[in-house]
Length: 197
Image 1 (cartoon, rainbow, N blue to C red):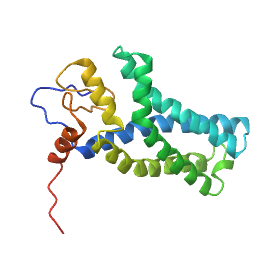
Image 2: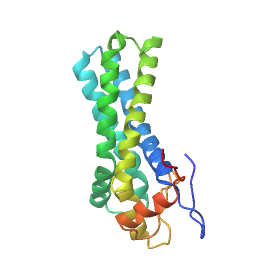
Image 3: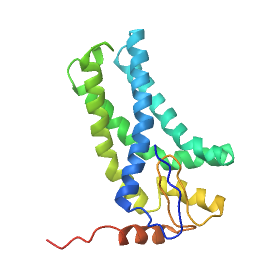
């Protein structure tokens, strides 16, 4: 993913863009975990329940890991970083996993397909795409209220003491020490004007 370096006078991303980037971030971790979990379970010949359990566990592990990596890389303590990762990703990953696994279970033959079958990969792709679409409004709602990934960006910035918070993996940034209400108003001010119906 591209790196974004905040520069003085650079416009902060809109709320929609932040929500999209947070969703892609979570979807990446979920996707890695889901694919790896289902490939392992399929190769081992596991039944549906343990296969899904492994995929869900790995989705959370990789989802949190993608958030932890830059936090730990900046010198943050493991306990603090883990708390931020849990706050930033848990709701989004949970929504994605519920939707993703519900779709895979609903597609006839998807859980029985071998990893060499087109159905295996097609069902995973469709399920992850729909899961990402379902998680986007959740991430948007959380960020607009200063929660979810907004917590990570605010805390990273306060710890860094700079003028712009930077999220190296996704290019997200927010103004320094922004409160939840300040953050919401700044995001809303950058949304396109919508004329009333």
